[in-house]
Image 1 (cartoon, protein in one colour):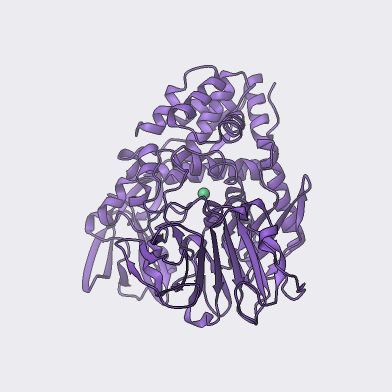
Image 2 (cartoon, rainbow, N blue to C red; image 1 turned 30 degrees about the vertical axis):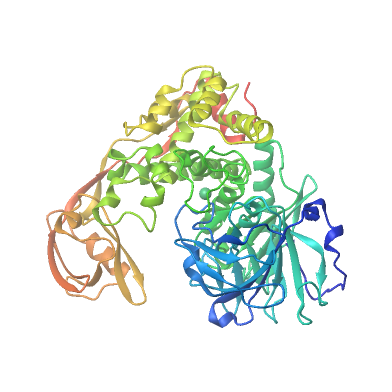
Length: 616
Ligand SMILES: [Zn+2]
């Protein structure tokens, strides 16, 4: 990454031809991205293409951005599309169905001007307002069909009062404030190079008045955290902790595959997306004062960071090359995402940033979330991986949401079983860490490709020295999970006995948004579910009183099974009254604890699992 401090402008002359063999090729693609009117939420883009053969060229906008497995159809946000030739005369073009435009290339070069309208600040979509611009290149930069391997130059023209840029791209080592090939005489620009579109689309660019937290080096390689509005908190100790996370992860794999890495803090909000040598992370430092929030942030950052290995380099074969027109489906997101959750928890523990109990509690939450939903009876991990495009926020709705599981919940649980089984079968000589290292070496470094489902299992079984059919059954079927069997390999126990939860059970969770209380989820087969309450219903009153999320909880806590609760609810445009008899809820706590009287192998497995040390 680079953060470019535009105030220290060094005037330089740009000789593109001398830069690199990259540009020895005859055709060129260059973008200028400006944001002169940020209040309109619009980026202006100029794309220069020269040296391409053919009377016409099709240019396309990706329908998704890798890492966020949802179809976003970025072409819909393109406005004021215009094409001219090198002499600035308008030339012909027409919109093709879907995400493409056909433009005239009669003089072997053309310039496309267009605006990209943006809608919401989110790590998976481009966004600009008066405070900052977040350029997600897959939603901003067109590509000529068939030219994904073409190098690209991108010039960023920040809004006049903004002074920094954060991105994983390499800047061309001049900050240009002279007229250049762009042909304008004003402005201060920063120019970046992407060796191909895959790298461009995997390198978000944040522009604004940003703050850089104290950087650190791991094995001589710089790691930075550059953020929009990080807030006031102890930045030195935070970055020291982040360094421990990065060191623990890099020691686990044994190699650092990039020359610089940047955490790009996009401001308060939710969500993060991994990239090759950066991660876009929603971040609000003012939250870091509570220990619980700090731990949540460490898990989150460890997750996004570990993805630089697991998914960006250790990857299912289907996740590359990317199909920007359709998206890529794989049955192994449980490996890419689920095992990244597993390792976020292990890395934070091994970095010394959480206690054993906090680690056990993290796994307990994963298991509880999985076991508490009816989807576990319908959908396996492989199905959930494959169907995520239709299961996500824009996918299944209504009663169908109950037929899905999340690989973020079951994935880490199965990862733990797999790890304990390998450790047990090899008398603690090998572990899931060896699987990750082998996949990295054999597929990323040597074969330079992803692995198939069969190859993933083969690597696991080869390292375990035995069949792992019992664990892989939990991947491909909905079979009930026998946690106890695997946890005892590490001398651990888990409480799977269901117990009655005190109080009356309605079965809803509620969330306040702008003075209104909405139902955020309804437990399947609960009294609320059976009465017909559903997610997103607006609650107008509970037992005659206007509610907030807190009063609902208080009302229910004071009632017993068999008592009635009365609710008035808006379902769409319809106001409905419900009188619901509360039930009893039984649930296993899934609390994990050490067993008394462990044998030597159990002790050794637990110790090396917790610390990351090699077994005996
Ligand atoms: Zn992830």
